[in-house]
Figure 1 (cartoon, one colour):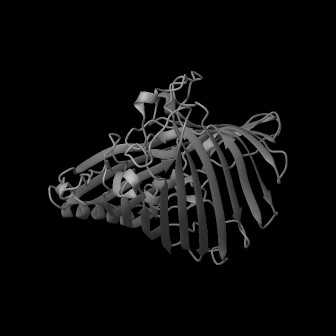
Figure 2 (tube, one colour):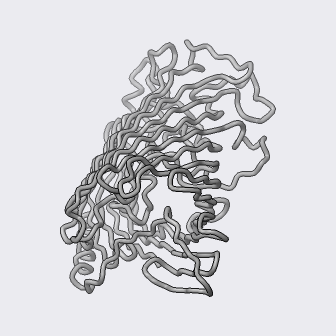
Figure 3 (cartoon, rainbow, N blue to C red):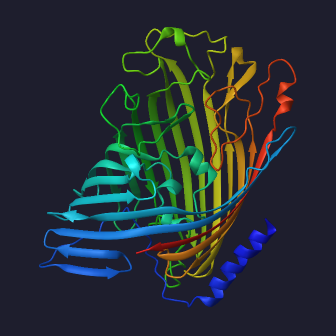
Length: 472
């Protein structure tokens, strides 16, 4: 492990000293904005924002984002019979995406299409939406986009401080969603209020992960158990009282403007209901299933996030506080005895994320430190005396990152180190545990003896990553 760190640091040092310092660009791959077109004839240009085509009544901007990464991971499970040795070194193309955006017929009729070549199959379409930009205060949208719930998830992967988002975000984000929504802004120079409100499908991420993940192209065969009455309502509010804080995880402003203090506060609320099928949480196979093919159990989850963002002189601070509550219900004639293993309590999870970054050289070299903490609830069943099931482990994450910007986000090197500690819950579910960076081992269940001593109670991960990103 020490040799890999030395090699990675040497590679970064060589890049810092050998690469010529070029003109920096503060323009990231901003897939949320739409370029305007118009004018007579055809105007084509290839610049720092990609390939742009403008004609009378039509505009197109095409950009491609690629991330090539080296990852080293060392896993150590502590305790009796701990599972050690699941370590790896891996090169991969983490992301390869092409974005098409612009307007058709009139500037207020806007479109966006984002294709993810690294996913393929029925997940190649990452975003596809149409927008009627009526006015500043209200715009109508339809299609699929990344849900506007929390800040870090909504920030483009091309504008992150670390090579990937943190463990809190990966525990609480609501992924992509298909539906209709409205958005708008109150205030011209100062965005006093920005809002997003929508109604969406909602697709269960997993039978032990009660969040939305509506990315795949779903059929309309309602017996497939994918879109059987699931729905989701989402609201996000933001205020930027001193001026707009750009969507990103650091202060990319140049020296001519970074002396201005900026901050923003955001609130996200998401309500999601769906059926699920996990006998480890609640099951009654004797009761059968409805005609739709879904089990006779359902859940509704209320998720809330409060986030804050501060920018000044190249210093940035980003914080998110998450709370999520899940309640389980029956469908149809399905019954359960709350004093038996077929009945479980509800779930309440919390998480906190804190990230500080500073540009040592404005728009060229920065460092960042993050701390993430997840308190994941364990289901209590059997009358509340025994912990039967854990959906994911409690965890803490401490990380250090270094970014070297050759041409802004369009060409950069990122190096980071993470130390992740997981407190493993007891588990009886056949679904197993879900984790951000791994599939965590499970602790043995307590069954009136000392069986719980047979499994590790902690699982620790050391993760080292080096990534090259280019956008054209």
